[in-house]
Image (cartoon, rainbow, N blue to C red):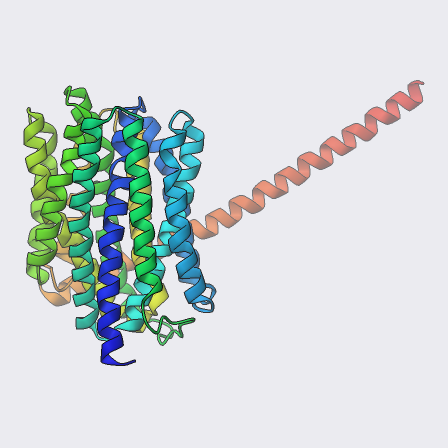
Length: 442
C-alpha cells in the first residue's frame, strides 16, 4: 500500500468519524431525553437498555471467539452493517408509544452498532500496523467525532427549542440519517479496502491476556458509571423542572469538553489523573441545585472521561498484533456493552431515584479508578512488580469466575432439560393411565 493511499485512507476515516459523530450525537444523544420527556421512568428506560446490552456483549463475544466469521467477508460485511445501522436507528422516534417495539429496535440498532465498531477497529488495526499510527488516527477520529457531536448537540437542541415534540424528534432523526449515510459513503471510498483480513496474532500469551483484561475491566466500570449517568441525569433535570433543551444542552458542553480532552490528555499519568477527576466530578452532579450548573459541569465530566477511552485505546493498540485485530477490537467493544449491562442492572435493582443513580455511577467509576491505580503497571501508584501481581491475581479470579459460571450454566441447562424430560414422561404415563381407565371403565 502506497503512502498516498494511506494518507487518503486517513483523511476518509477521519471524515467518516466526523459525519458519523453528528449522526451518533443526535440518534444516541436525543434518545434518553426523548424517552424521559415522553413519560418513561428510570426503570422503564433500564428495561429498554437491558436486552440491548446483552445482545451487544454476546455479539462481541461471538466475534472474539470466532473472528474468521468476520475476516472472510470483511469488506462486504463491514460496509453492509455500516449502512444498515443508519436505517435501523431512523425508526426509533416513530414508535415511542410502543415501549416493546422501542426496546426491540434499540437492541437491533445497538447489535448492528457493535459489529460496526468491531469492523472499524479491525480496519484501522489492519491499515496502520504501527502503534503510533493507530493512536494518531484514533485520536484524530475521536476529536473529529466529538467536534461533530457538538454540532449535532447544538442542532438537536435548537430543533427541540423551535419545534414541539414529537415533530422535533422526527426532524432531528431524519437529518441525522442523511448525514450518517454520508459517513458510509466516506467509508466506501477508502482505497485498497481489504476484502478479507488475515489475522497475524496466534494464541495470545498470558501476559497479553492479563494486560488486556485490566484495560477491559477499567473501561467496563467507567462505561457502566457513564451509562448510569446518562440514564439518571436527564430525569434528575426533569424532576428539577428544567425544560428539554436544558437536558440536551448537556451534550453541547459535554462535546466541547470531549474535543479538548481527546487532544490534551496524553500519556499514562494524564489518563489516571483524568480517571480520578471524573470520579469526583460525577459524585458532585446530584448536589448541584441549579440546572445551569449542570450544563457547565458536563464540560468537565466529558473532558476527563476521555482519559478512560484513551487509556483503553492505548493498551489495545499495543496488544492487537498479539491478540489479533478482530479479537482486540471485539474485546474493547464488549466493554461498551457490558458497561451498559451493568448500568441497566444497577438502575433496575438499586437506583430508586435519579439522585441515587448518580451516586451509584460515581461508585462504579471509583472501582475503575482503583483498578487503574493498583493493577495497570503504567498507571499504578504501587511498584510495577506489585501492580503486575495484582493484575495477575484479578485475572485469575476473573478466569475462575468465568469458568465456574460457564460450567454452572451448562449444568443448569442439562438439569433443566432432564427435568422437562421427566415431566413429559410422567405426563405421558398419566395420559396412558387415563386412557386405560376410560377403556376399562367403558
